[in-house]
Figure 1 (cartoon, rainbow, N blue to C red):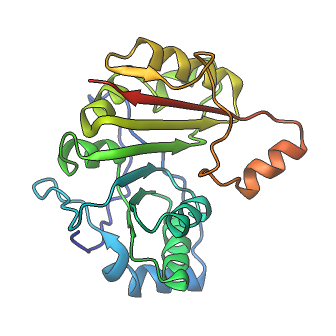
Figure 2 (cartoon, rainbow, N blue to C red; figure 1 turned 30 degrees about the vertical axis):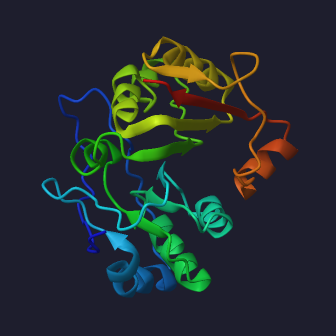
Length: 234
C-alpha cells in the first residue's frame, strides 16, 4: 500500500446522503503525536482518489471502519496473521494510539487510514476485493431527528456490497437496540445479502471479535450488544 498521511479533517454536508463520521476533536498525547509523525510513513495510507489500494499478497482483506483507539483491531490482527487488515479512523488520538500499538506488536498485516471511509471505498477500494467489512459500535445518532446521519443506510450498504467479494462478510455490532433494529431492517432489504443468523436476526458475538473495555463496561451496567453478519451471495 502507499504510505503517506492525509490531513483533511473537515466535515461538511454534501450531496452525499451519508458520511462515515462526524469529527470530534481530541487532545493528542505526546506519544500519539510522535506516532503520527514517525510511524505514519510505515503504517499509514494516505487518501488518493486516483490511486487504488493494491494489496501485495493474496491474503484475505479485512476492512474496519471506525476503529476508535484500535484495541480490538490490534487484537484481531495479532490473532490472524494470515489476513491483511486495513482500518479507518478520523479521530487522530485513536490513529496515534493504534500506530503505537502496531509498532509495539510489530504487526506487518495492519495499515491505517485517516479519512472518510465513504470516499475511500468509492475511490480506493477495487470492486470485489474485500473479504470482510466490519463496523463496530458506530455512532447510533439515537435522537429521531438525527437518525438520517447513521452510517448504516441503503446506499452505503450497496457500496459495501459492491466492494465485497462473493461470500464476503459484513459484520456489524452495536449496543443500541433501536440501531440494531435499524441495521437489521436495512440489511434485510438490501439486495445480494443473506443473514447468517440462524434466527434471521442477530448472532452471538463471534470469537474473533474481541470484547472491548467499552463493551465490558456496558455489560456491567446491563447494556445489551447486538451482532449482525450478512454474506454477499451475488
